[in-house]
Length: 60
Image 1 (tube, one colour):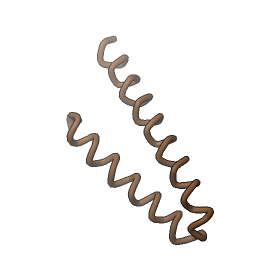
Image 2 (image 1 turned 45 degrees about the vertical axis):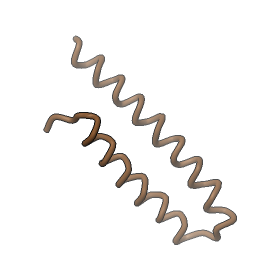
Image 3 (image 1 turned 180 degrees about the vertical axis):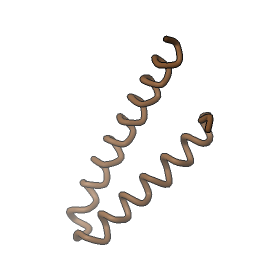
């Protein structure tokens, strides 16, 4: 499967939505809101790192 920006973005949004909704189900909103913001930040950093690693692997 070859990933492009659209596929990567859709998969990322689905996974992020599942993880963030799971944190709201198990915690009070006052705790889940900051946790979900932190989760999204980590997800974006992991996505960027994965994309850069893929670019590196493709070039070598």
